[in-house]
Length: 354
Image (cartoon, rainbow, N blue to C red; front, side, top):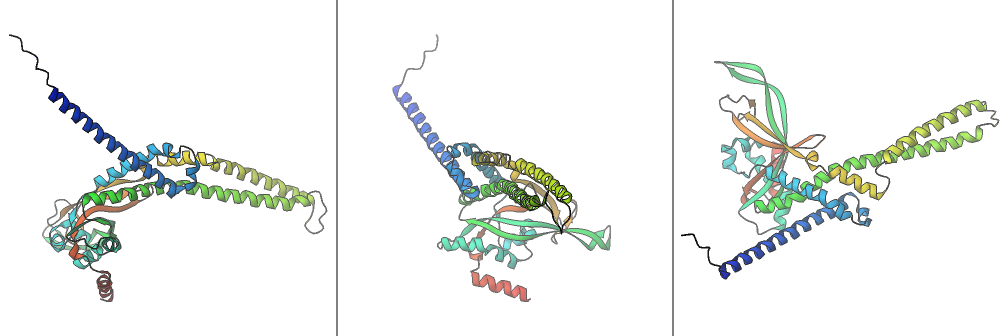
């Protein structure tokens, strides 16, 4: 006997319709939030680069796609940062990464009591318990002579490479990881915008230099012109002035050609916006992370993988087009480890004074 179709149930259809409407509302709200975030990013880019761009009709619409890509790449970068890693006396003793970053517990506490942390605590005086932060540090490899166990013999004056860290700071802090990532997104986008903008500023500086050179050459030509064909009892015949005039005209022509080339794409505010969009259109080229994996012993000497007492350390390091940057690491630490400013200064003074 053939199966009968399921009976039509108005209640089930109503539930389905309600779920669909609810889902569409959520999607609409998410889309509005996304568009609002991108519009805010557009305005921040304009404020950072050239506020006169607001005089162009449709500037925000033209910037929207590139601002959207910058935000997406910024979120991708923040997701690639490892951690959070605990920073406290116990982790310094047990975690090879924490031990490699800080030479002693006093240094760890000083870093946790830095300016960004102090400013955040001033704005959030009731904060207690555990805090989350972004730790930045510049890795530095150094060559040195040391001792090594080769076979069953200790050998002196062996070339070794150590890994140290300078410029260590907790650059941002919050009371949770979600809040920390939200607070970091716009500063990361600002860095990428500043890199692209720097290239435009270099071109503008070149234009200003060429423009000044053309004006100076034309001024010199004005000085030479009255002497051409005249009688000068002191400086000699007019033929020398004619030669100088021809030389100056040649230099002016060359400088004006260079100036025209430099101005191409930046002749007006419309072209400036196109140039800016082109410079910012590939954010992955402006800032990305590279992975560092190496084996360290407790003296921060880089060892082979099979070396006894060595531990694997994994780091991610920021890189700009022109140079490498600092390593980035999410951390969390107890509020009680943060010194007040007077304690921190006194501790630094004690270390300096020995």
